[in-house]
Length: 170
Image 1 (cartoon, one colour):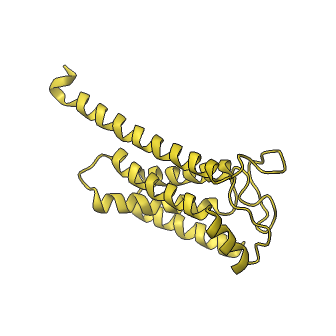
Image 2 (cartoon, helix red, strand yellow):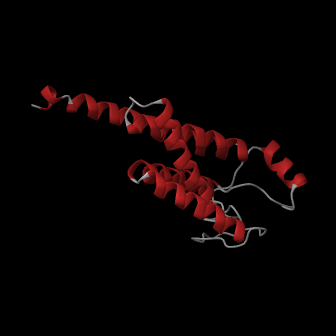
Image 3 (cartoon, one colour):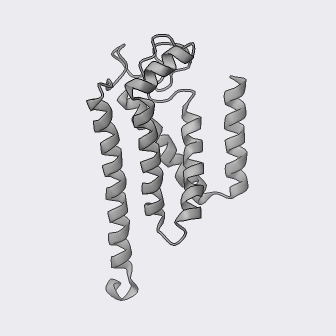
Protein backbone atom coordinates (compact mmCIF):
# COMPACT_ATOMS: atom_id res chain seq x y z
CA UNK A 1 0.00 0.00 0.00
CA UNK A 2 2.84 2.44 0.75
CA UNK A 3 3.97 2.26 -2.88
CA UNK A 4 0.63 3.82 -3.87
CA UNK A 5 1.02 6.77 -1.51
CA UNK A 6 4.57 7.55 -2.54
CA UNK A 7 5.89 7.03 0.99
CA UNK A 8 8.51 4.55 -0.16
CA UNK A 9 10.04 7.13 -2.49
CA UNK A 10 9.90 9.79 0.21
CA UNK A 11 11.57 7.45 2.70
CA UNK A 12 14.38 6.59 0.28
CA UNK A 13 14.90 10.29 -0.50
CA UNK A 14 15.02 11.08 3.22
CA UNK A 15 17.50 8.24 3.79
CA UNK A 16 19.64 9.40 0.88
CA UNK A 17 19.96 12.96 2.21
CA UNK A 18 20.60 11.73 5.75
CA UNK A 19 23.42 9.53 4.44
CA UNK A 20 24.80 12.54 2.53
CA UNK A 21 24.71 14.58 5.76
CA UNK A 22 26.50 11.85 7.73
CA UNK A 23 29.14 11.55 4.99
CA UNK A 24 29.71 15.31 5.15
CA UNK A 25 30.17 15.12 8.92
CA UNK A 26 32.55 12.15 8.52
CA UNK A 27 34.59 14.12 5.97
CA UNK A 28 34.76 17.01 8.46
CA UNK A 29 36.07 14.74 11.21
CA UNK A 30 38.53 12.84 9.01
CA UNK A 31 39.82 16.07 7.45
CA UNK A 32 40.50 17.55 10.85
CA UNK A 33 42.21 14.38 12.00
CA UNK A 34 44.41 14.43 8.89
CA UNK A 35 45.26 18.09 9.60
CA UNK A 36 46.57 16.99 13.00
CA UNK A 37 43.69 18.24 15.14
CA UNK A 38 43.49 16.56 18.53
CA UNK A 39 40.43 14.51 19.49
CA UNK A 40 39.96 16.05 22.95
CA UNK A 41 41.64 18.73 25.00
CA UNK A 42 45.36 18.18 25.60
CA UNK A 43 44.46 18.46 29.29
CA UNK A 44 43.22 14.86 29.00
CA UNK A 45 39.65 15.35 30.18
CA UNK A 46 36.36 16.56 28.73
CA UNK A 47 34.26 19.34 30.24
CA UNK A 48 30.66 19.97 29.29
CA UNK A 49 31.28 23.74 29.10
CA UNK A 50 34.47 25.80 28.94
CA UNK A 51 33.73 29.21 30.43
CA UNK A 52 37.10 30.81 29.70
CA UNK A 53 37.48 32.59 26.37
CA UNK A 54 41.24 33.22 26.50
CA UNK A 55 42.17 29.94 28.17
CA UNK A 56 43.89 26.82 26.83
CA UNK A 57 40.57 24.96 27.20
CA UNK A 58 38.71 27.30 24.86
CA UNK A 59 37.36 25.45 21.80
CA UNK A 60 38.56 22.16 23.27
CA UNK A 61 35.54 20.89 25.18
CA UNK A 62 31.91 20.07 24.39
CA UNK A 63 30.42 23.59 24.54
CA UNK A 64 31.87 27.08 24.86
CA UNK A 65 30.91 30.71 24.30
CA UNK A 66 31.02 30.12 20.53
CA UNK A 67 28.22 27.53 20.69
CA UNK A 68 25.42 30.13 20.34
CA UNK A 69 27.01 31.38 17.10
CA UNK A 70 26.81 27.85 15.68
CA UNK A 71 23.15 27.63 16.69
CA UNK A 72 22.62 30.90 14.81
CA UNK A 73 24.42 29.34 11.82
CA UNK A 74 21.69 26.69 11.90
CA UNK A 75 19.01 29.40 11.88
CA UNK A 76 20.66 31.13 8.93
CA UNK A 77 21.38 27.95 6.97
CA UNK A 78 17.78 26.81 7.38
CA UNK A 79 16.70 30.18 5.97
CA UNK A 80 19.12 29.81 3.07
CA UNK A 81 17.84 26.31 2.32
CA UNK A 82 14.28 27.57 2.47
CA UNK A 83 15.15 30.31 -0.02
CA UNK A 84 17.13 28.29 -2.56
CA UNK A 85 15.67 24.79 -2.16
CA UNK A 86 11.98 25.39 -1.53
CA UNK A 87 10.78 22.24 -3.28
CA UNK A 88 13.43 19.99 -1.72
CA UNK A 89 12.85 17.96 1.45
CA UNK A 90 14.16 19.28 4.74
CA UNK A 91 16.85 16.59 4.73
CA UNK A 92 18.27 18.03 1.48
CA UNK A 93 18.32 21.46 3.11
CA UNK A 94 20.05 19.89 6.11
CA UNK A 95 22.73 18.47 3.81
CA UNK A 96 23.35 21.95 2.41
CA UNK A 97 23.60 23.35 5.93
CA UNK A 98 25.99 20.58 7.00
CA UNK A 99 28.13 21.16 3.91
CA UNK A 100 28.49 24.87 4.69
CA UNK A 101 29.18 24.26 8.39
CA UNK A 102 31.71 21.49 7.67
CA UNK A 103 33.52 23.68 5.15
CA UNK A 104 33.67 26.45 7.74
CA UNK A 105 34.95 24.10 10.45
CA UNK A 106 37.65 22.68 8.16
CA UNK A 107 38.75 26.14 7.01
CA UNK A 108 38.58 27.60 10.52
CA UNK A 109 40.85 24.83 11.81
CA UNK A 110 43.34 24.86 8.95
CA UNK A 111 46.92 25.78 9.87
CA UNK A 112 46.84 29.01 7.84
CA UNK A 113 43.72 30.32 9.62
CA UNK A 114 44.95 29.26 13.06
CA UNK A 115 48.30 31.00 12.45
CA UNK A 116 46.50 34.13 11.26
CA UNK A 117 44.23 34.07 14.29
CA UNK A 118 47.24 33.81 16.61
CA UNK A 119 48.97 36.81 15.02
CA UNK A 120 45.91 39.04 14.58
CA UNK A 121 44.23 38.53 17.98
CA UNK A 122 45.12 38.15 21.62
CA UNK A 123 44.86 34.36 21.30
CA UNK A 124 48.53 33.62 21.80
CA UNK A 125 49.02 29.88 21.85
CA UNK A 126 45.62 29.16 20.28
CA UNK A 127 45.69 25.75 18.61
CA UNK A 128 42.24 25.57 17.06
CA UNK A 129 39.27 23.39 17.92
CA UNK A 130 39.54 19.86 19.16
CA UNK A 131 37.71 17.40 16.93
CA UNK A 132 35.18 16.94 19.75
CA UNK A 133 34.49 20.69 19.91
CA UNK A 134 34.26 21.02 16.14
CA UNK A 135 31.86 18.09 15.98
CA UNK A 136 29.73 19.62 18.70
CA UNK A 137 29.73 22.89 16.75
CA UNK A 138 28.11 20.87 13.95
CA UNK A 139 25.58 19.41 16.42
CA UNK A 140 24.75 22.94 17.64
CA UNK A 141 24.24 24.08 14.04
CA UNK A 142 21.93 21.11 13.38
CA UNK A 143 19.95 21.90 16.55
CA UNK A 144 19.58 25.50 15.39
CA UNK A 145 18.56 24.31 11.93
CA UNK A 146 15.73 22.13 13.27
CA UNK A 147 14.67 24.79 15.76
CA UNK A 148 14.30 27.29 12.90
CA UNK A 149 12.40 24.71 10.85
CA UNK A 150 9.84 24.16 13.61
CA UNK A 151 9.45 27.53 15.30
CA UNK A 152 7.96 30.81 14.10
CA UNK A 153 10.37 33.18 12.40
CA UNK A 154 9.84 35.89 15.03
CA UNK A 155 10.91 33.53 17.83
CA UNK A 156 14.00 32.41 15.91
CA UNK A 157 14.98 36.06 15.35
CA UNK A 158 14.40 36.97 19.01
CA UNK A 159 16.55 34.04 20.17
CA UNK A 160 19.31 34.92 17.69
CA UNK A 161 19.31 38.51 18.93
CA UNK A 162 19.31 37.27 22.52
CA UNK A 163 22.33 35.04 21.83
CA UNK A 164 24.16 37.95 20.20
CA UNK A 165 23.33 40.26 23.12
CA UNK A 166 24.40 37.65 25.68
CA UNK A 167 27.68 37.06 23.87
CA UNK A 168 28.35 40.81 23.60
CA UNK A 169 27.71 41.30 27.31
CA UNK A 170 29.94 38.40 28.31
